[in-house]
Image (cartoon, rainbow, N blue to C red; front, side, top):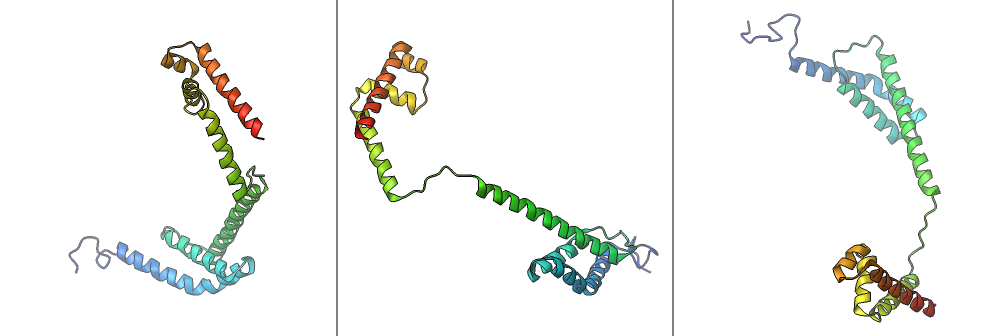
Length: 188
């Protein structure tokens, strides 16, 4: 007689976790041997390729392994093939969602022009023209314009910073914009 409490060999009607796990692995092995060929045929008739059928068969056995072992199946054939049909439905649903998403992405017109060397060169030249035009401005006007446009400072903050009215800041900004507009249009 074993002295361990709750031992499977000592306690009638009870199984240890190790015994249940071993029995579960044996059950899965026997289910695999019995159902794998039929499941492969089932999936091959409905799937695109042999590898898809193999993946779905493996996924089905993984789900069986993760399910609680205490559930008894009255009709194992019906249960397993219902799981297989559900896997096919889930896969078809996922594929529909993926294909509709990719079709929507392809259908959206992108407002992007292709990047070609001539366009890059033209952009650099334009940037150089703007930079030259900014250098032609008086220092204070250039500084106010850059702080307003590039740094996003408010006109009131600039007025306080330079000790002037907001109307004065607006005049500097308008002067800079007018000069830049005149210079860039003259080059076109």
